[in-house]
Figure (tube, rainbow, N blue to C red):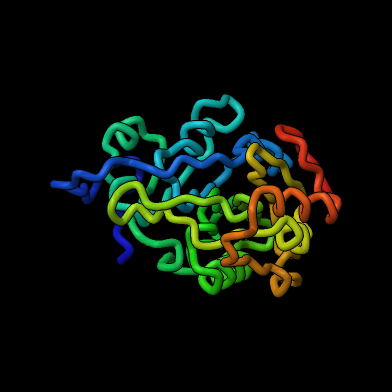
Length: 240
């Protein structure tokens, strides 16, 4: 199912009779998004996959740097798409209710920045690899993929029925750094944010998440250190 809820800032197909509440707040270093574009004053189109409570959209609309950007959102959880207070504030231009893997791939090319913040760890390993390859393949040649994830198997279960909150995989820092990110940052507890360009597609085979729940924070930190990953909360590292 892939259903449009908001179109051009207007609710066009509201979810009714739902008791589910918006969920899914990302712990990623969201401020990294302000460093991606060479010219933040230019028109920028952003796709926020798994927007949850709308934290990224609110951050962008609250900043004079990016208030003019257009932000679209997709979320597979009914509660996130049943948020009239958020929609009335016209944070998101378009909103669709559907899973990330259900998004028509031809839509990705129109966006300057595609955001996948604290989403991929909720997918199976095979789906995560497929989605990452699809995003990198389908996005425009000058577009960017901003992805964040815990760099260990962060234990998390569902909180509401169908909320998609359970963590199914962990992503080692080595797996993300092997994609040759253009820049990255980290938030506690070891939540990495990475900006990828099209060149990462050449290294996609090295993206190897794990289903091993014994991949703890301690092990994740050790692995991050041996790939020269700088675990410095709040600091931005530009690699190119």
